[in-house]
Length: 253
Figure 1 (cartoon, rainbow, N blue to C red):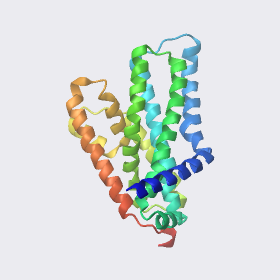
Figure 2: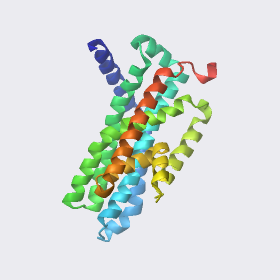
Figure 3: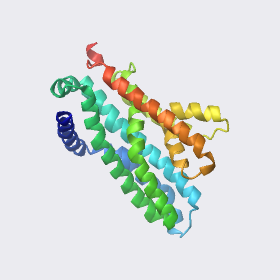
Figure 4: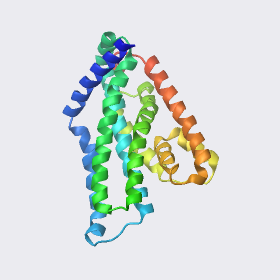
């Protein structure tokens, strides 16, 4: 056990250094959403307008969903995909003895990096919105919740690793998926059955349901049960995919 933890720590430190060297991903996960946020909020801020708390949270939920989903896909899932296509995953698995160690070694530092990105965006949002103390506390609570949500969503997106997608078309598919997931997350369904199905298939809805659990206490039992079931399904599915996926690149199969 101690040997496994030592390997995980060493690999995580290595992956963290590699992640910090790739500055391009920060354009998509931090710079672009921050620039868009300023573009849509600056006029009201400059005029001294006050944004209602419900609107602030609604806006933040959308930006958090984008940062989290884009970060998870680009910085975790795509990284594993590219490692496999370049045959590095096979080499690292041979060295570590278990490909799940490689995945977790990438997951751990990326969770921290995505959280730093969200925190930096939150600082910008706080300066623009000037929220109340209660709303500020909620933002802090939601940020802490993300430490749980990010790994769960990452496990869900491992489905990408078993789809018959070639490296040259990966970006096109993932861009479409991200926009579809975000668009679906903006739709509210009255039917509990439809809500349950959408929460199962869309990580953005899963994320927003988790946030809403702290805002709509009347639905806490249903939402809490749904989150536990879906979260457990994501974790089990992700670990099964990681343990069973082929190490061979699709170009060599």
